[in-house]
Image (tube, rainbow, N blue to C red):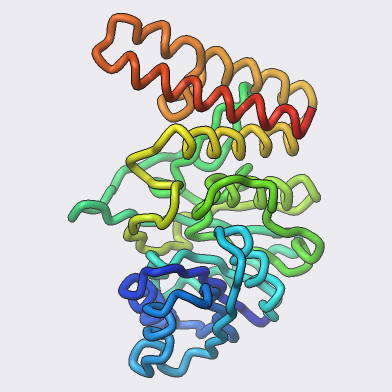
Amino acid sequence: MKLTVLVPSYRRPDDLARCLKALQQQVRPADQVVVVVRPDDYVTHTVLAEPGVTGALPLECVIVEAKGLVAALNLGLEKSAGDVIAITDDDAAPHRDWLQRIEAAFAAEPKLGALGGRDWVHERGRLLDGRREDVGRILLTGKIIGNHHLGVGGAREVDLLKGVNMSYRRAAIHDIRFDERLRGSGAQVHNDMAFSMRVKRAGWKVMYDPQVAVDHFPAPRIGEDQRHTQSAISICNAAYNLHLTLREYLPPMQRMLAWWWWTLVGTRVYPGLVHPLLALVSKNGATVRERWRAARLGAHEARKVTP
């Protein structure tokens, strides 16, 4: 079995250097490492030219002209030759046994199409060390349970994976690509969710094993899709991507339930109607209402695309 590691990168030279050094230390070395970069990303090209960073890695630098993570991932898939393609972010450092565990899992289960694992998040000088059994599921209501960064327990089937740590069997994705309809100028939020759900709908097993682990050092994002300071446009884009994915891959009855749950209840990130109503007497009421309007606009625009 040949293993390809795919790493899209944009203007994070120090993070990418850490990632590539972690890949050099793998117990089971990669057969191919594909790093996708933009032509004007000179700092990243400089890092890739340093022998101390790339070492003996079987590295291939792929140039992508188009903006956004989806274009980079899709071009990276086209250039990947492995039987299994392991995807991680440039701000992650896979554990030494990462590829070894990935290879063992795919070799043991012929119907395994996708495998994800825990990303140990290092944020603001501390490690987020919680414990969650419930990971990577979509409830009947359409509510999403993530928790990939907190998962404990054994390997199990899930509904969706997280982009920083996900691997795919080539046979499962030979005619599947990341959705180019997704909005955003950078991260294009929920691209990982859409891709893994599509693999599962095709009949392959999608599994999560917290022992297949990476350390994750969330770096600032380039573009409008910021992590902690979301604008109205970024909320609208993310809500559009979320609803486009749910409407595309959920069965009809669950899709209807999901639409009403997100319309009426929602979450803090994508508020439903209850949130601005409860915030009428709150000091941050205006902010909640702005988030609600942006989230509903994205949802309605997604509904026009997938009636």
